[in-house]
Image 1: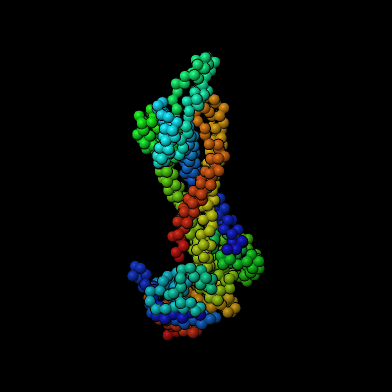
Image 2: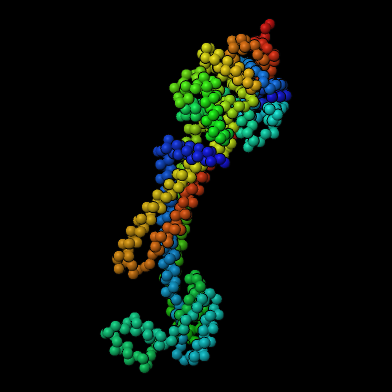
Length: 302
Length: 228
């Protein structure tokens, strides 16, 4: 392909977009709508994932060791726990550690005297804080651990209900957004196809003349493909910019409100948009290419 | 240049476009294809362009077998011929210069060549002063000259003209025929499908007459009808 031809293709594409500005704008808006949903669902899914990950790191399973177990017994118990499939780690928390942590949490001035007395006769049990490789195996691990209750452990404490709810929410978000993205993607392709079909049929005489003077199919196709790609790029970049700035300002609001910022950590806008921009762009460009290539096919048969 | 043997085209609806056409046209010839509407003139021209498919027989154009040519080879095949239509088929949003340059751009000619050949061809057809005009600003004759310029700018060895004077008044028609004769003198084979009796009778060139898709007469020099 020659440089002069490339220039010609781009010029033709730009002219065509300008000449059919209303339909071009309509296509861009449709691609934008599709891209917007894609970005929004991506933002929600990425943040739910991110929050889950944080909770994962804080929510472990605690297995409390019976008082009558000796130090050797604790080691034996540790090996048993680590032998359970999907167990990532098991941290031993001694009675002293547990008390220190308890004091950290509740040891303000009022309670100081009461807590100070506990050191001589520590009532807190020893325990293991167990991390699971993946949250979906947590239930299995808990069931395995419960087999040792009365046989090493006093009881098992866990918060698997919260994890279950979060996992379910995440799944719903993923399915709903996938369906929305696919549907809107299809609608966008059809609308871009129609836009380009209109410009193609308006130029069907031009195309037939091109065929008579010996233009190759690709020579005819390129301007239309570039037109579709340009519509796709502009259409997908508008919502990227829009979402970036609104996400940023929402994030700022959350950060400045102490109540909300304690609730959860959100992904930074940079982190999120480094990922979402190429995805939206690729989707837009693909919609443009599919839309234009399929609408011109019929006219090339002469 | 052209060798047709028992060439036949049958359209999908069963209509026979041409039947048993056997013709040989040498390089540099000037040939009229005559006949009334529906005689098969246009079908024959379209077959040469490979716009319609042969259903039987064979046709070679410039040594290329039309039966075996592939879709992707078609553009390169068509670059060896110029085409002129009754309705000019100029691009309305391009100037005269751009319309002619377009044919060169399509074949990916260098910009330098485009800038050199297009003005030369435009002055040959007498449109040098109208280079910046748009088709709607031209008379019918001027539009046909522009489409002639476009047809010959790539210097094709073969020029096909389908009713080139059909939309023109007699004086203008003669101007176009003179131009076609000039083009023929440069060595280009010219094939004209027409039913302009007066022109054919006056020019006394080779005439191939078609009726109901068959060749009914092929004479080296003559008029529209048989002398007898």
